[in-house]
Every structure is written in structure tokens, then in C-alpha cells.
Image (tube, rainbow, N blue to C red; front, side, top):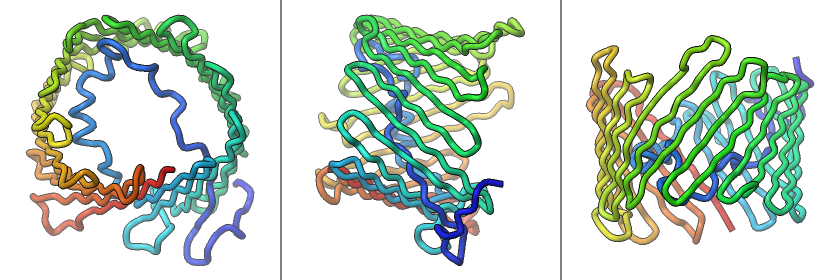
Length: 340
């Protein structure tokens, strides 16, 4: 059991405070040329999944200010505001980041059920190097070292979570005008190796990825795909899951701003003889407001409205229900992101 945090909690539910940095450290290097293999089909994926929140678990509100203060509130529908249900546990999260020059300090305290955990971390950036360290009360220490432009167009990322010395990973990304390469190697006696690459020009990209387990000598994954990007449309076909899944997608832009868009995705799983067809659309009501919707052949209908309340501050209202099981309770989500 972790240390008690009862003073932080309200009487009607286990509520706690958490402090942690919000930005992801592992963003890809600046994209040029065909991009990484993971970018093939990303436009359709974003239109069909981005901002459609996990309705089952949480309602979230976030904000940030020019001095780096961020607020993140989560709530489960049907209970008072500022509670969140995550795998049956109620949690209240509040993130706060102190930014002093290029050094950011963070701390966290989270209660799930009757167990509290705490962590403290720091980020330091100097020129093209970023160092991130975080320690928690479970004696885990997470570290990451990111070096951009270690060579021209190359980024290196090294990470490890102690005391598990076998958790270390080294990732290298290389982006060129006509090709890209990415490799991930686990730093242990029997490393897992993942390689991916793309080639292309003038909006056409061919790519593949493969994973290899040196301990067993078997391929853990292999995929291949082709992507076509034009001002009017995006199209992609990807064979993945060791050849078991074929995914094809098509995105059509209806105007030059690419804010009015239609999307179609077809997913075929050969092993279980199953097809999933999803259609979606995005429409700009005005310069500050867009609506999105998606529907698949399983009857799942989702929709959201996104409004820019003030510049850079976005309010999102989303919902989903099963058209083939109308007796089920619809799911709703709400998010507010405030940025300076």
C-alpha cells in the first residue's frame, strides 16, 4: 500500500491531485519528404478517431497559461464534476508545470481506490538536447534523452525505466527528401529490433516495417503500405498484422482549406473473415466551429462539435451511440483546452 492521501480527497469519492508534464517527448523529427511509415494513412485515421474521446471512462477539461501552468480535470459521466472512473477507480487529476527558462519541474499524486502514488520529475533542454527524468514512490525511475540533429535530418531517442535494466530502448529517426528510416532496438541481451522505411516523391510513398526477436529468431510483425497524397485527396492501402489485415482508406477534400472533408475506410481481417466499413465527414460551420461524424457497418455512430471559444482555446462536445442497440445508454464526452 502506498502512503495515505486522505487530506486531498473529498468524502464522497477517492479524489487526488496529480502533477505531470503534458507534452509528449517522443514526437517525430520534423517531417520532410515521404515521412515515416506510420504516417501512411494517418490523415484518415485522424479524421475517424482524433478528438473522439473515451466516453466510457472520462470527461476532461484542460487549460494552460503563458507561464506553463496546465489544468487537467477528468470526470466519469453520472457522478459529480471532477471525478473520473478509470478501470473502476475514481481519480481527480490536476497538472501543474513550473517552467523556469529551459528547466521544467513536475510532481504528481494520484489515488486509485485506496492506493496513492506520487512522482516527481524534471525536464531540461539545452540547444538540441532534451533530458527527462521522473521518479515515483514505487521506486521506478523513468529517464529519456532526446538529441535532435545528431546528424543532419536525424533524431536519436534513448529511454529506460529503472530498476528494470532490460527496459532500455534506443530509437533513431532519419528523414530525407525522398526517403525515411526509423529503427528501435531494446537494450538487453536478446534485443527486439524494429525497422521501418519509406521511399517516395511527388506525393507517393511506399513503405514497410518489420519486427524481429533475436531471442526466438522469429519475426514479431511485418507490414507494407502505399500512400498517395494530393491537394484534393489522400489514399492509402496497408497490409499489416503479418498479412492478416488489409486496410484501405480514402480522404477527399471538398475545398482548398481542407476543413470540409469526407473519408472512407475499409478494414478486412482474413483470419476471421470480417469486414469493417467506416465512413466519416468533417464540415466547417464557420471559421471557429467544425462538426465531425462517423458511422460503421456495425451500427456505431459518433459525432462531435468543436468550437474555438477564444483564439487557441477549443471546446469539444462529443457523443456516440449504437444504432443497432438503442436501449443502451449513449456515451458523451466534453473537453476544454485553453492555450495562451
